[in-house]
Length: 268
Ligand SMILES: [Zn+2]
Image 1 (cartoon, protein in one colour):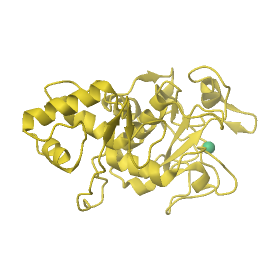
Image 2 (image 1 turned 45 degrees about the vertical axis):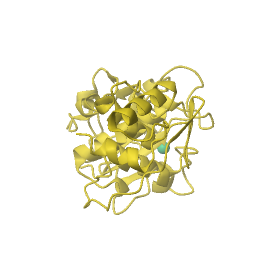
Image 3 (image 1 turned 30 degrees about the vertical axis):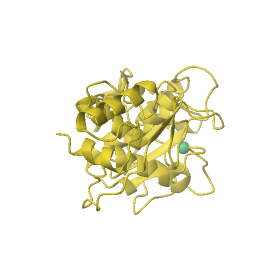
């Protein structure tokens, strides 16, 4: 019955804060066995306040739809709640790239009213968690779907997240990997520092995966820490870039351009 006993470890090993909800290892529907080959992303459409006020609903379900309603909950703080190791009623009628059952997909219910902005920490954790699941299942990032892609017209969630962008972020968090053969190395955009903010081609709540990637590399190779690896640049990021550029004899301008990317990625 209970099948996905790796759920908590996979999230924890990705550096996320994990709350193992009592009974998760034996919780699940029994109409089929989990053989996950994809991930479906949701929002809860729950209450406005609290980290994960929808948790009891995810565990118990509601009238006409027995719980559990997902394998994972994702709080506003970015905390991961492990709800159920077994089959969960989250995707329903619909499908994605040949998958068409709740037994084919891991469901993540992220706490959000359905029209509030996504907190940066939660969005970063969303990307991190999905990347970790994909790595564990050895599936391509293309197998990650929004509920609204699974059930077009019937479901709107998760709201306001451009899924092509989201999958790009997931791919980036996986090191451009996926289970598919590695594509040729993509040219990275220049990351410029401007008064505590970062200017990049696309950003959401100031988060950008390239910034996070640069922060990770700077943590390892710059003489000065870039601060937390959260995908948002600030003064520490700037100083860390400049110290790294000094160390490598590059032009010291605080901009992670082509030369600095190359130096960072070859720094080991
Ligand atoms: Zn949904």
